[in-house]
Length: 192
Image (tube, rainbow, N blue to C red; front, side, top):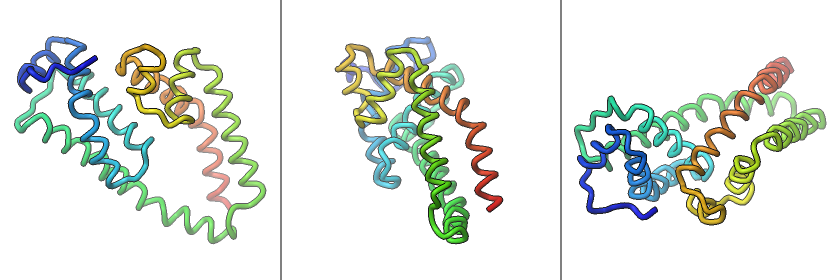
């Protein structure tokens, strides 16, 4: 869908509050490239940046009725992305020394850890294989082929919003399914 650039920010916000699904598509199409580049300049991680943007637009849609923007829409979105990038950087800085210390203490990656990593990858692949067909295709195109939401939408002849929904579903399913395994793995690694 081509964004309607003749809509003012106020009109787009009003469309959001009126539950017009096209408004979120307009927001996404008008601002995603700028916001992605802004996040990527700091994080240098395509997947993390895409996840931040996806979660931001989902939150905007979910909270559209309470949306209050006192600055320009672009400034509001940039501030929201800045906050999420800051959270990610803070999280990485908080846990990076712990991971470095664990690796130093155990002398690098051991054969056992390599097996555990391989097992985790296998579990993820099994979980992905259990996803609905279209969801699985979208997830793999995004993660394995590194395609953008727009490229996936073009290849599968679906909207970018549908692509975002499939990826959200896949990530949510993976987080829930892998969470238990990761907790056990973390406990094991910390006990070394």
